[in-house]
Length: 518
Ligand SMILES: Nc1ncnc2c1ncn2[C@@H]1O[C@H](COP(=O)(O)OP(=O)(O)O)[C@@H](O)[C@H]1O
Ligand SMILES: [Mg+2]
Image (cartoon, rainbow, N blue to C red; front, top):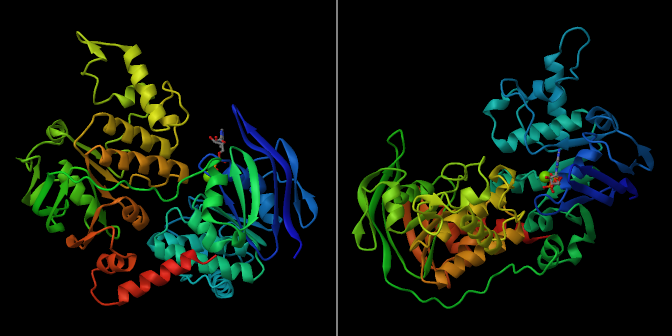
């Protein structure tokens, strides 16, 4: 079990940023080695150096003890390094076999498709990467396309596999399947570098973990000997609260009252079917459900972005069912949709302009129709500090920020308008632990100030830790509303699958155990 790959003092700078600062890393045979770090920590840069996409400014890469100098991925592939990028590089119109062998086709004069299919079949058996060699790639799910990418690497005789954020686009089910594949590959003697910013994933699949922060490696640890809390602290560089203490609830009167709501999509298919519930002031109402069960259509309809087909929406005693989105905003509803680009930001504008997009007519920015730039900058700086927006520079364009920080800008802008009801969909999707903590704190703070919060999330943990009550939606129908203090994960899982048998609960709880197992 010697070192398969080792990296010493590897350094790479981009203009204005030291992306990799004297990095040291060793990868053993027979291990899954996770690289854990927040967005921007330098993980992808390190992988691209190892894969020959960038050349280092200084430092060394040793493969099986020998120094290597890659000038392109071709060199790295030739040396036995395989990498699956976050965005696949497959051709949808071609079959699996065609894609796998592309650029390195079997056959002397003519392409021997039969031989390619045979080869793909045998690789897919050897590595338990079940996929139909003759299927068209465009017809495959994301999870299966990823397998094709892995097969491609093995067809080129990879002895080491780099997976950069491989779960980002996968469903929980596909993620579990990928983890079994990874474990199998490891047991077959393929060392794996697994890049992630998610603690649970690292704990579920890796043997060792190297934590990166701001371009440096801060620690390499054995996963079995560490806790999520330790990893989170190393990753963020300070104590992070994984579970936030909630204040006892001070529930006020009903603010939002949804009555028998029906919503259809563009093709007139019913997406929300007869949903009724109420959200009170001072309460977080969480809406749980598997993606695609009508939860996002429901909140779009409440915000006025989708038409209500039947039923009504009442807010603060007023029937707002037919009001425009703008008129709803004026009554005190703020909405942070799941797609940051829709209602989101003007990427070409700086943060000052983005943070006041909806408020520019109000004092103190506007005096006699003139904007006070100074007041606006001060306002922006306050919000940047309060929501920990990084980099803390009000004059940066929104386009320069990471997705997570763009999300913070949108949330800051909506919250700053002091709404009575805040509707948030997937508020922490794609964010790292430190940023998630900040957003969760802000949401609970608003609740404690007496605001009503309607939270839609596909992350059950997020729903369970923030909500006071939880509504579970399946197939457009609200299955039940439960008290978050007493309900179990299993019970919610059961409602999410729409089944009343024990089957749903059993599947879900075994998934959870699997994830927790190091
Ligand atoms: N090609 C590039 N040009 C300029 N800066 C880059 C480039 N690639 C990455 N960076 C910067 O280097 C830092 C590390 O980025 P990256 O390696 O992608 O981090 P991670 O994968 O951990 O999110 C970031 O500040 C990023 O903006
Ligand atoms: Mg990356």
